Amino acid sequence: MNLQINQEQINETYELKLAGEVDAYTAPKLKEVMLPLTEKEGNIVVVDLSGVEYMDSTGLGIFVGALKSSKAYNSSLKLRGMTERVKRIFEITGLTEVMDIESEVKGEAL
Amino acid sequence: MPAKDALTERYQDLLSVYLKAKTETTLYKGQQFSRKLLEQQISPEDLVSLHIQVMDELFPDMSEEMRDSFDFLLEAMIGYGFAYREHQSLRDKQQQLESEIEVAASMQQTLLLSDVPDFDDLDIGVVSVPAKKMNGDYYNFVKSGNSLSVAVADIIGKGIPAALCMSMIKYAMDSLPDEQMKPHLLLENLNRVVEHNVHSNMFITMFHGVYEPESHKFYYAGAGHEPGFIYNAKEDQFHDLIAKGLVLGVSRTTTYHPYEKEIEIGDMVILLSDGVTECRTNKGFIEREEIVSLIRKYMDLPAQKIVENVFQELDRLQGFELRDDFTLIVLKRLV
Image (cartoon, rainbow over all chains, first blue to last red; front, top):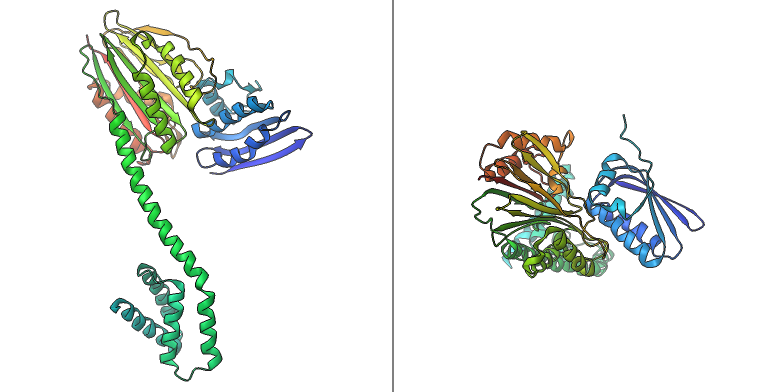
């Protein structure tokens, strides 16, 4: 499985739309794109996860790293559009409490 | 060098047959011969010089330009020769590193191995299997006074950094004073250590519990770990063992909530890693209910047999290809 990352930029807002799986194989690719964006003060990085069917703990680690980096550099990181499966691992790990996550949740395909 | 002479002879045979008949079969044999050359560590420029030698014998009256062009080709191959030798030495180094990793892995397993303690009141079963050489899952039992402390952790970030992290936890746990064995306090302490030391992409999920045989109470707390189960014998029902909390290593000031549960005779506490719930089969993910029904199927057996049987069934369902480290622990109250 692969991961596609589409990036759009309006002023200081960067939107990353992900599709596929974020796992040990694809995580380095996501890190390469996302991390530098969080390293500039004032940047707003919005990650749309509605196309992500699966994320493992290595993938989650990339978001933990990006969160820390956004705090260190005064940028902001927002996540949105999680599927139930992805939302579950953010909930179990307690990350929903410390991350900016848009509450609207996309259900699994019927 | 007899081996090289034999190669020259073989090359001469193949080439002359090909030049006469020009068949696909001989071309294919040429391909196979190239594997043999690699086995014998013949470098690219050696092959060109072999070619020159053979051509000289086959065509003694080859034109001077043709002959010189081969010498030129020989020079042009030198760079490939360097690349080839570099590749060889990197391969040797890689093999050396691999064997070193293997040694490190087995050392790690020995150093961090937690014996399953004899504990009169509880029947304890553990299975912990790494997906790669190093296990990112970690479990630890500590007997302190009459109580039994059990920890399960999953270090995110695989391989060697994860293994080093695990050692860090073990020594941090071992060096905590007894009064801090309260699970939520232990997690708070560890969180500070981990947050301070860990690489930003890494984090640790952990569950820690303490069973007190006098009160038959199980005290526990969780740091973002996959919830276990608790089996209530009286109701004959499994419940999720929820212990909410943020994973270790994200925020320095995180506090953890203390939980407790009364454990009756026949009740079971089941702890696991997310390698158990992230099992993938052809049909999709294994659901938690399926794990419960597997445990139910074997729950009359001794605890060690339960975990081994559940592991074997899940391993079979995924075609014996473990994608993530797998840890399952069962504690059953006997008396």
